[in-house]
Image (cartoon, rainbow, N blue to C red):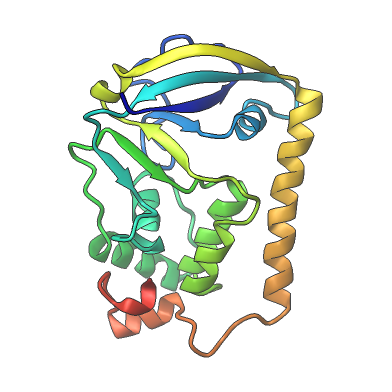
Length: 227
């Protein structure tokens, strides 16, 4: 049996995750969002006022169809397309609004028949990086780089009844607010600081591709410059 260990950070102990629950406007739509890192799960479990739990599970991967948005057949714009399908974006300029339509049309990702999605997590700061790209503020290369800031790792999202039938609760660890929320806050602040530092440092290269270049050149998913 091919099993992996995953964790879900929550204010609750969840012994039996239920298919069909969860917010519809999460990164990859409605699903059960997990990580392979217990420390990250503990941070996700906490907010400014409350602690929570890192729920631990084994997931039997046998027979599950996995969509890995960081795989070789995808680029960062495929990840962004999935995000645009599900998250609510506020875009402040015409480039951003046109960019959203272009990405959705030219970088679609089929999720029908998929059981598990792997990909970056769009925490608040990371969500703002994606918005900056759409509004021509950073390049494709820079967007790919900044999604790795803070070392969040991939999230693993169960989206099908089959995947929910192959998850097993193994227990939990407490995540005290006074310990893990500061760690979450520091991780986010560090990522923001590194991002802003690079922007001020003029890290842009003439070879970098901005959203306006993609629109003008009608660049598609098979363009090697996006890899």
